[in-house]
Length: 376
Image 1 (cartoon, rainbow, N blue to C red):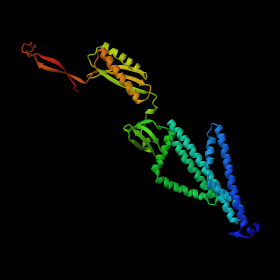
Image 2 (cartoon, rainbow, N blue to C red):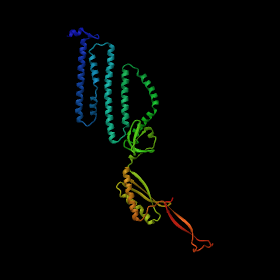
Image 3 (cartoon, rainbow, N blue to C red):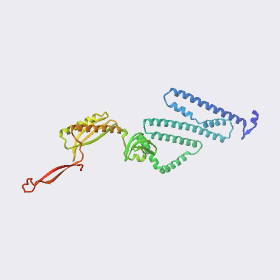
Image 4 (cartoon, rainbow, N blue to C red):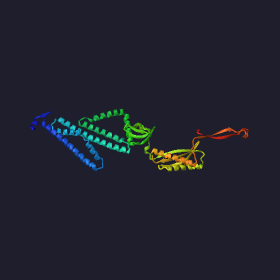
């Protein structure tokens, strides 16, 4: 059998070498697969005993070893048993470099994917901004495959210096063509680094008010109070003054009310105490001041300042409602009425015929006050 194999050839190579090559390729494939399974099993046992995520990531990365890579590596091992021309030896050397580099790139790429997924999941739980994580993921992947491409070209004898220079010129042209997209991209990077707002924050700018739902590489999505989704360019968003209400430690409330002019000084002096009592009765409110502010055209004006110790808007409205009701009860008990816009008119009317005359002999003119509500 061996003599027959030595005497017969295929493509100018003895059949014996082909048999040895096939056997070597099969053995190499089985050996690489066995070593890989052994390494994964040992790492899984190690990961079960530790609390770190590094060994878990290593297991998942090794499990993503491409079967085609193992097959090509096994065939390259088998090719070592074939007497090939010198030029084929050089090409097989390049192929070895490509296979190893491609598999390493797949491992690193999958590792970046796992890191990005875990990071985004933890940021989603903590309501943090995912922009930096996403951009770092994209940058690492782009750098990884760019380095692999350049390394393969350099290994094959290509002058990568000229290639990189041409890519630089092309990159400038592309950057000018997609200037608006790059502007939004860098605005997204600025949002990720400076963190003026994060997912879940309630913001107000211009006539837009809503909660941040998603911060993307080009746009930010906001869920408005009326329910619709507002999509805003990152660049345009950062050009505005943004009010972030989510980050308020507490809410300062300023409000006023007016009472009528028929109130006595003693009643006016008692009003701030009624307000203070109403505010201090609230668990989530802190009284600051209450003052008789000014004399208005048709009312006596008071100004009140207090703080709600929780930034929630609904809580503030509940507190303000209870304070208003207590204030109405307190003023009613005191006998003081809330003022509404009024104007007092003094109408001059002729006196009756029996009325006395003045020194100059003319009829006496008597002023009669009349209160007309609702006139401004």
